[in-house]
Amino acid sequence: MRFERYITGVAIAALLSSTALAQTAPPTSGPVAAGVPNPAVPPAAAPAQAPQFQMADGVLGTVNDSVITGFDLRQRMLLVIAMTQVQPTPENLPAIRQQALNLIIDERLQNQELDRYPTLKATEAEVDEELTSMASEVGATAQAYVDSLGQFGIRPTTLRDQVRTQIGWSRLVGGRFQNRARASEGAVQAALRQATESALKKQYLVGEIYIESSRVGGQQAALNGATQLVQQMVQGAPFQAVAQQFSAAPSATRGGDAGWVVEGTVQPALQQAMEQLSPGELSRPIPVEGGVYILYMRDKRDGSTSSVAQIKQVMIELPETATEAQVAAASQRLEALRPQLTCDNMLTRATSEQGLLGTDLGEADPANLLPQFQQVARSGEVGSISTPIRTPLGVHLLAVCGRRAGGAEAPNALQVENRLFSQNLQTLGRRYMRDLRQDAAIEFKS
Image (tube, rainbow, N blue to C red; front, side):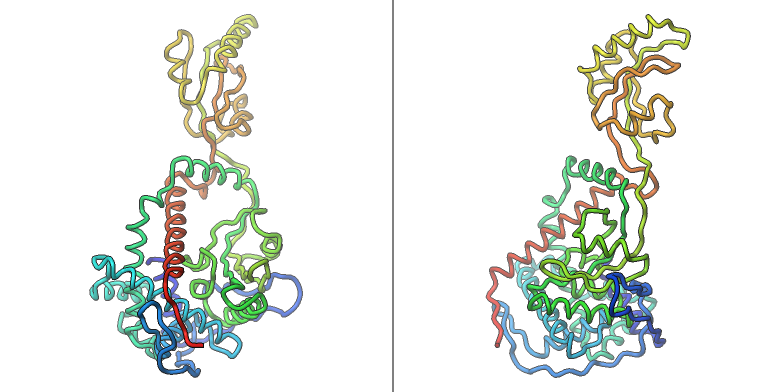
């Protein structure tokens, strides 16, 4: 709930404010990148008033045996508008309606599934606690928080029902898939290796909104909808809230936060946009196969040249004054031993054979190692054993037993494991919802 609470708080903070501040709209032609001042920190909005639009009364449809009325849909549309600050226009009202309807359907299915697990349902006290926490993060009381939505014509029960469902669904998904979502040691190590390789390339900290054409009535409808959203964000709608409500990308649950994207890992149209955007800028709609993207460039960084290697060694001590014959004999002995050594057994072999010393050097920046070791530490393949290396201390075999990106921002194993767990849990939750939709009897009046 934490990230959703933040996103909602951004929108409500703006609703509680009475100061308006305009942003500059992007030009309508030219390159893909549009210079838009920081849409992720929205301007404060003027006092809210309930948007005016017509909505049919009566029963609109059913989700299994649960009825959806025109009042239900209008309430959810108003909540989407309030949370995103996207102002309804004739052009974007169909998209708002469709998004609100999708949210209602998902919520009804989630509640029907939660009926099978009554102990997971949130109590009224837990809903009160969550609303109080949400309000406190924007410096408001829970009552002021709810009252701000009342200005939009939204009944308190609409927000409370949404919060109650989110709490219960989060518990259900977490409890059901916790074991399956855990990342294996192999997956963590593979992700760390990928992070190290990626660290040498340019990286972009990106927010994304993806409008999927199949969900909105075709590619042109997706492009029109994305254009409307860009205009609304330029006028003050917060990027994170818009992404959460409208984006079909998995990052929607994180407010569109796609994290650090590595150069060359995205479609060419997106790569071109990322190269042109400066930090704090919002792109124009970017058509791709199957939909349309909107990107927000949060930050950029060049590839890192630093990496940290995990090194172990076996050595034969020899003074600098050792003869060439002594050095050759030591090198020959180590070369004969080398095919038998691995990162796992080399220290044990060193302690079991006379005249050998084994040392775990741990993780080290290659620049801090002896000059003779630096090239192996920088470029040796993980798991490889070097040829004999002569130093003033003796003759050495080096094993590169691991490597990761260096620097303060380099992820560690625990961070990677937590990230993979979160991603896996989100994927399993989306599949759960997909299966519920496929099995449901969903009917609406034409």
